[in-house]
Length: 94
Image 1 (tube, helix red, strand yellow):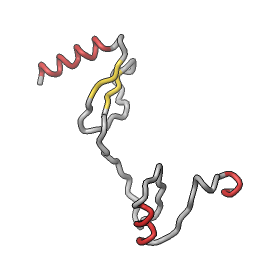
Image 2 (spheres, rainbow, N blue to C red):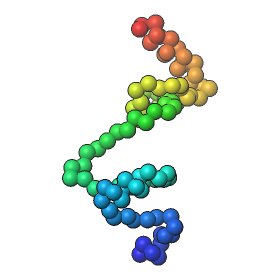
Image 3 (cartoon, rainbow, N blue to C red):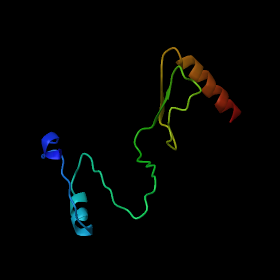
Image 4 (spheres, helix red, strand yellow):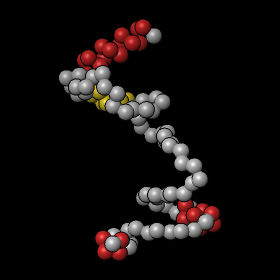
């Protein structure tokens, strides 16, 4: 089925040991799917970059932002005054 539905120029399966995988990982890739470990451990990666906080109609909802330090806030025109007031209160309390 793989040959029938996947373009061989787009997907490659490579089996190898440390030497082969080291050489492969030195290349620039769009995506790598890697499977192999004696023990699998869930991982959360903090990769830097820009970290927005999105605030809209679900005001008290955690939208999944887990970054250590958000850089900026994205909100709607309707919620901007509410966000600004809440930030002022928090800063004054701090």
